[in-house]
Image (cartoon, rainbow, N blue to C red; front, top):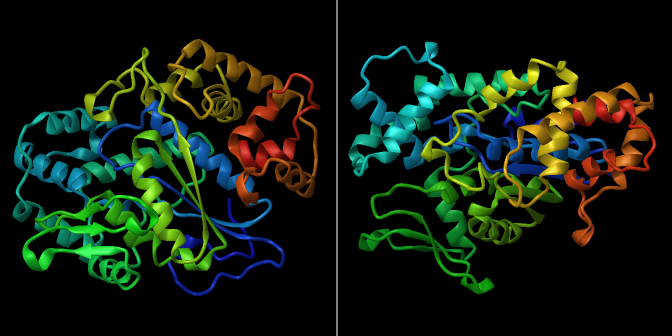
Length: 393
């Protein structure tokens, strides 16, 4: 969804954003999924929450959606996988492989006890930083994800685009240090820590002794140069990353904007929450899910139905396991909502979503759970067709 009078962040410039009078400037920044495996139900839940939050918020605010795989390619999780592929697989045509086949290689990589030495990763890091190079296996996954986004009607924030962070690692460390938020021990052969002790929070390592940045360091490189252009920043993460995102929130707030944190529970499979590295996604990864639900429902029913299920039915917690029967029920419900939708104009939709702002601290973004649950309310008027089109389809 584009906003005609608002410069999209995908342009990757740092000029002041043109703002329509009376509308807050909001940056939506979800946790970025590394392109090493298929998208799982937990991934999909977070992506759909973000999509509805962003698209609904654009009706009442000047909102941007920052999601840059480029900024996180330099983590050991990704570079190590690439090095493993080149060392163990040789010359492989990844463009002809499915996401499951690539994901199985990732499971093999995570099962190996040894990790590549920093020297082995350095050429990959240089290629990413200097030219935006992406390993063919991850390029294949990102292309597959982009096609799956399109099938679900999700906004594509630039999955296959080169979107480098605005700060180098050194510049990010310098900026933290100038604000008293960094403890740099590299001169003595040590790591670099984010230092939020003034907030009563513990030190958090962001660069190892070997010079490797972690995920939090990449997030700081990406977001620190952006947040000054916004009134509010919305961070979305899952419960496993909540501690790091609490720290990220406090650091970013030090640079001006209000920062909100939305934490979303993962989706258990058969009662258990497992990391994607375990490979417990063969029957429920996004490609398999779309093939199964698409057999009996059209594209609009699928787009709306999966949002009803992963947002309104599962809710923000991790209390319910993935359930094909309940998902199918939401697809049937979507068919009825679409059949009974009323035609309204865009302004009417904006008034409706404005009633569903996140309530904590007068936030400027729309709460996707409150908004989507309203569609399922028993005694409700028929859904507005324009709202469904703008936010859910």
